[in-house]
Length: 118
Image 1 (cartoon, rainbow, N blue to C red):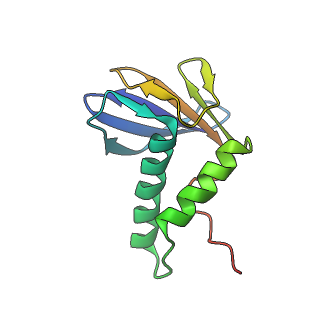
Image 2 (tube, rainbow, N blue to C red):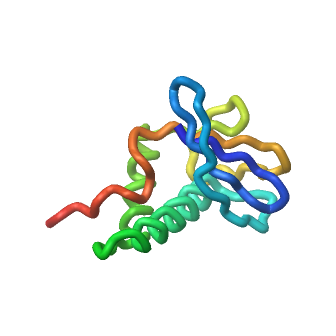
């Protein structure tokens, strides 16, 4: 599971195991106080794709990975919880105030899946 903690304009994504073990993954600067779930997913995917592309000679496209993540979210491939409330509409705006926690319960890391071959 990945937990996002908001503080001082930075969204910090924290990986969390089912045993409750936590590890900070990385931070992402967000200037806005409100953001749609779709945009939060897009920004996370773009960041993860950039990190993936920096580690490997095989490049993947962030737009393709974002589309895959959006389809996965729409098909309940992962959950997004804001506080203790599940968000199901990707166009819902969430308030990113200091201390807000956004939990993304994912099966595999968003943005790191290989692109489908035609």
